View 1 (cartoon, rainbow, N blue to C red):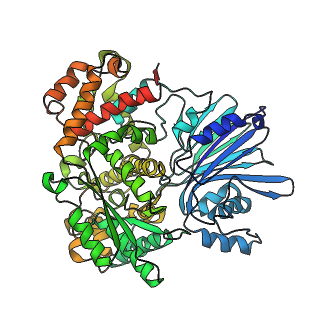
View 2: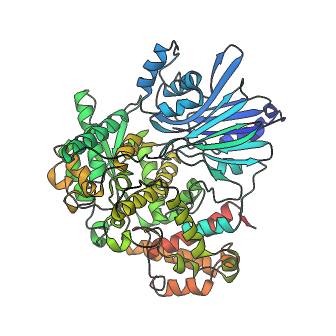
View 3: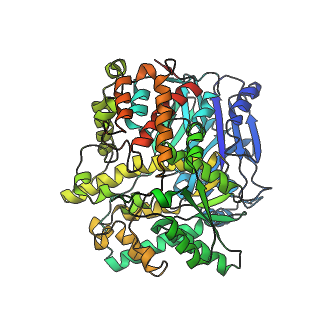
Length: 614
């Protein structure tokens, strides 16, 4: 994995602007700690920071290939999981390879098929290609949005980068937010509206989209979305197809020139990935698979069972590690560490995030990076297979608006009158929700139940899943750790999109279809273990510290957040231990302690990024 950036400006000699390009590159060092490359000409400058995973000698970027007087220059962040298949196709077309990296496969794919090359790719990626003959910048983002791509377009220039901070390093881009930015932070956050970069005039290329920029202007097109088809496979055939797709996706993502490890919680998703990886290591005579688990100090003492978090991960992770004879390590974090890393996690994400849910992953990845460079993780199975309670609990399934964000009125109550006069909280969130539903191409003959399920799957794919992928990318890449997510394989998503809910909800269990498809790969007790979300600390010290952190902000008359908030309402929330707020801030993991920490992160963000509100 890597970091990329670029600047296209017609009529400007960017080769004389190396200082700007180098400044942008500096922001990407954590993403690409191993090497740097810059290429610039009259109209364009391209920047790359590299994390070496495949072909250390042959994968340097920007990568350049020539055809006569035409030059093709590529900067690329990601992995192609069908690189070998594409290599063979390209060799049959007469292309000659100089190395064995997927970067070269991508570049030659463009030379063979032009912008249609995007249709051939299976992987996670964000890339930009400059074609000197056509005078065109062609950029794309993977179908699920695993890898990021932010940009700004003004007058005769386009500036882009892997992270928002990369754009803000450019002298022409200022850290300014308007009413939309305020709404994103205080109403939608830690989610973001698809395509929105929070800061004024900063956008994110949406998953499954391409960007084409030439002297005629900017053109953005969608190249992928799940297609409606009649599901004709019976249940047995469906199980076989799901199993085949999942196993193939995992195996493809085990390709690397450096050792691969797995995140292991003992849940269905991470256990399945780990089982396949451990078996492959054994078959190929490799060393024991390394697995890593996150836990918190004294969680066994303070853990509180709930309908959303029925049990601890630790015993289950140990159970799977012993079963697979893996080299397992538990990384235990304390409250002081979680609080201390809130700012670093916010900077990694460029906006306030999921509080300790982010900072814990940030610290976890830093520890893992000391021993590994590539990890596999179980993200996205819940969105794709229907693992969340809002898929099967009627009161959540049929709620108005995003099911993980039902506290718009409560959030609005924490804002100052000046902000409330500037934004329209209820209208903003309802508009975003209905805009998303309007994007869905619904089959003509479909029951009301199946229609609602398709809506639920789509908003999860485009909102909730991208929030978690954003978190995973930023927290891992902040320490140069590449994390792959096999359940994000677009072939799995395409197939699951058309499977009826009754099949997905086999045995009236969340992800029932996936469980049955994995029979024989996992022990029965692990296979049917009730879903438990990403673990968080239950230690009362964390609650006290997050509360004290927000109280400090509230007491500071010079705090940047003060003009934006209803100080009295927030004080009441603190005094009532969060009871006056009454609802989770976001999903199942952000309750009172995380609300306190999130608001404190907002103040950190306003200060650190010198944000102006217009």
